[in-house]
Amino acid sequence: MNNDPGMRTVGGFAIACGLAVTQLMQARRERRSRASSEDVARLSDPRFLATLPPADALESLAYRFVIVGFVFWTFTLIAGAIWANDSWGRYWGFDTKEVWTFVIWVLYAGYIHARATRGWRGTRSAWLCIIGFITVLFNFTIVNMFFKGLHAYSGLS
Image 1 (cartoon, helix red, strand yellow):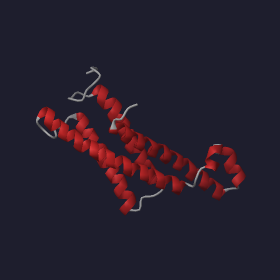
Image 2 (cartoon, helix red, strand yellow):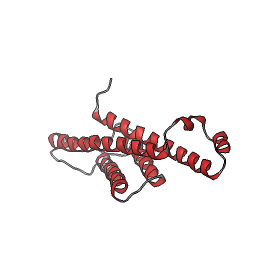
Image 3 (cartoon, rainbow, N blue to C red):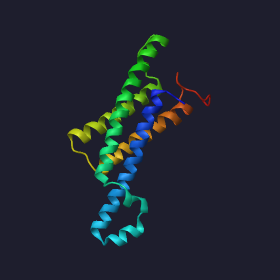
Image 4 (cartoon, helix red, strand yellow):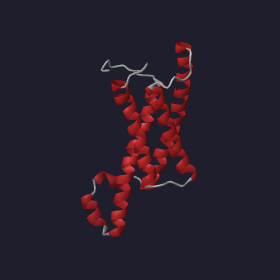
C-alpha cells in the first residue's frame, strides 16, 4: 500500500473532480425536470442520478474534498522546497515540475477563494474544479514524460 501523501492529495482532488462531473449531470437533470415533466427527464438521464443528492449537496462535498486536498498539496509543496534545499542547495529553481506544482496550487487557491468570497457556485465552480484536476493529470503525465528538468523521469527527452 502506498503511503505517499502526494497520492492522498491527488486522490482527494480526483474524488472532487468526480463529484463535480456528477454535480454537472445532476444540475442538468434538475433543470430538465423543472422545465418539463419529470418522466421525460428521467427517461433521458442516467438512472443512478435519481439516487444521488441534489447538485448543491454534491458541490458542497466536492468543495470539502478540495479543501482537504489543498492542505495536503500545500504541505507537499513546502516539503518539496525543503527537500530541494537539502538536495540541490536551493528552495526553488523554476524547474518545470516545480512551476506546474505551483500553478496547481494557485488554481485550487483560486477555486477556494472564488467559491468562498465571490459566491461562485454551480457550473462555474464545478468547471474550475475539473480544470484543476486536469492540470494535476497534466503535471503527473505530460510534465513528467515530455519536459526536461530535474523531475524528468521517462528519458523521452
